[in-house]
Image (cartoon, rainbow, N blue to C red; front, side):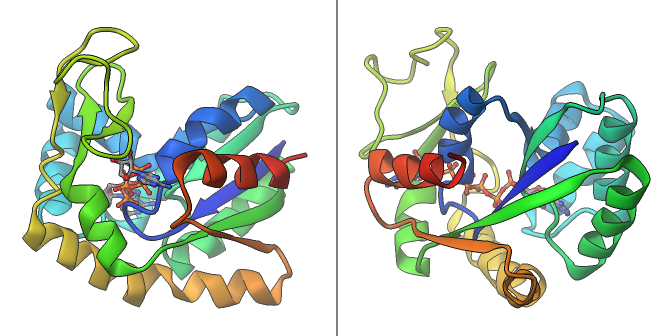
Length: 213
Ligand code: AP5
């Protein structure tokens, strides 16, 4: 098994970039999407996770690691993963290292999307996602052809409940305290490749695609 990690603050464009990296044979694995599925299904985990997410807090490391472990257990040796939003704490890094040994998973690189806070606030305030397929749009930078309707499957567009001004600010604080330390960790391992995520969507996607060539 092989994996690439997409690292970056909330709203830096991880999902947007993942949409095109899938064409390179990578399976997109977003722990945020997995949790939102649980919220939609109103499972015990979803109910708990929904409250934490809406307050800009992380779910526990055990929950995040458990979801990834389950995925690896059910995958074959030739699988290639694009991890989006995992790992996001140093403890999750340790768990990933342990799982890597157990499942013979090689981490090929970590793509860091760098983006300043003021750009992020503008992006998340205007983000809309399809409530059925999850495709991500932006009212200004990546609008749909028809207002409020997904181009892919005609689903309704929704504004994520964690994209309020209060929660965005909280998420940025949590990112700099708990996730940003991963940058130095992976720099020391010479695995980090940084992309300026303030460029246009097409340019960021092209830069990410180049990393996978
Ligand atoms: P998650 O869904 O992973 O949220 P996130 O990391 O905060 O990232 P986002 O999905 O908000 O943003 P993105 O970087 O994907 O940007 P996007 O492409 O949408 O996780 C949600 C929550 O789940 C977390 O807060 C946490 O509580 C929990 N969680 C998840 N994983 C966890 C874990 N491992 N451990 C513990 N808890 C976990 O783009 C944003 C907007 O900008 C869009 O509108 C897009 O169209 C636009 N845009 C993108 N790129 C550009 C560009 N280059 N130019 C202009 N606009 C752009």
